[in-house]
Length: 126
Image 1: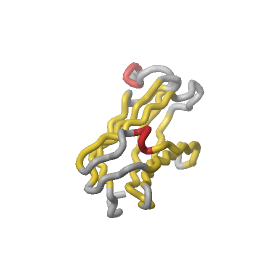
Image 2: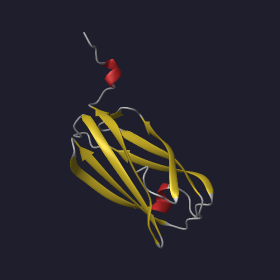
Image 3: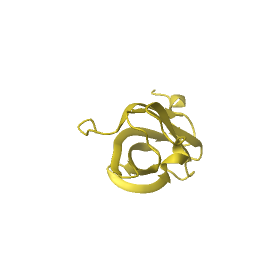
Image 4: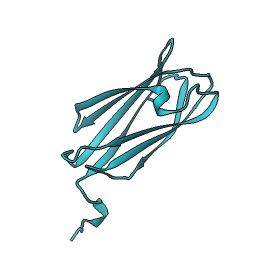
């Protein structure tokens, strides 16, 4: 959310592989920076499929990055093995970070795609 005045600023998101493949591991890497030291907190990850909320999980912030987070640049990395029955299509992920005494460190959302068992690059357009 670019309108928020957050302690954590997100510089970019990398998704690997992209598109993600159902039944296979995937990694979201979030490049961020902060002007304030952060000793801990939580990361809430919500997933939406065609606008419908389908999944939510909460993680200790220190499991997603090394704590304490010092002033400057840092990286959050979240690994997930997608269930083999995950339907292909377009998804949205929303991640909210909160810290001790700070209700919301940042809130980001981004779109991603899941393909079914094989890379979309192997699909012909003919």
